[in-house]
Length: 235
Image (cartoon, rainbow, N blue to C red):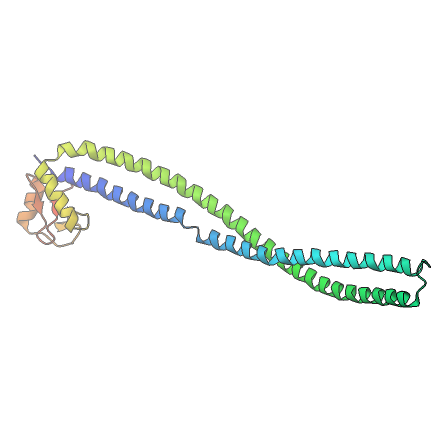
């Protein structure tokens, strides 16, 4: 029973399965790799951590300014209401008004500086958020493409394995054992084609006895150099 042709077909299937399996591993690694997204998310969080306390500081300053302004207004009204007659109390109220106004001026200067910092931090946050949104959209699009490819490869792989199962019964057990042994030692290429009297893998020209034996196809014939099983393919 001639087995070389069946072995070559088996090898073609095995090589395709191996290739698809390797690509599936690459896809799995790509799907798991979200380093760019993680870094972008970390930047957004960092920018938010800068902005949040600045916004809180603005609110605190505005609140203190409003409180002081209200005190100035109330004290001023009391000062000119005529209800207070004591010169010492009147002088104290004038000093308090001046002190509050001075304090508000300092607070307003600080508020202005803080609001400028808020604008800078807000701009940075918007930029990092936009970058994150863009990366997320790109990542999702790329993932969808990879997922589609993953599904296709799995389907093709299943079809190849089914073809392999159908082919195995046509190969004798001893022949299959030889093929598997060679496959392990010959980088998954156990079978080579006789091309122009040479082995298609190692490129060594074969002697006439080997060439004739391969062409007759009466049994397994091996490359005189690399030891792979040789088959003859006409045309």
